[in-house]
Image (cartoon, rainbow, N blue to C red; front, side, top):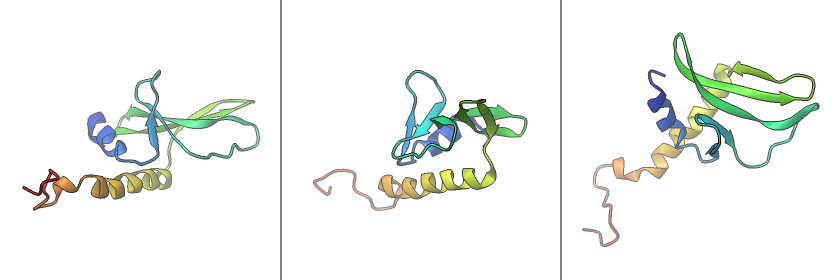
Length: 105
């Protein structure tokens, strides 16, 4: 992504994404999550700057060692596809002819 704001705007449309109150730019996905063997917490994600632009970094928490890595393209595609899908549904005012009040005026 070209800018941090652009990536945040897209991510805000994900139906299960929740931003962390105590850590800016960190988020997680709410809902059911099964921990893997040796894992003690669900992964967190953060918006970070790389040489080629802004991207998402995943933080995994395991008892033996914690790890952080840039997410792979498939995981990123899955996350962003949910964002784009919900962006079309949750923002109908972008469509022509949409009436933004209940009276229909």
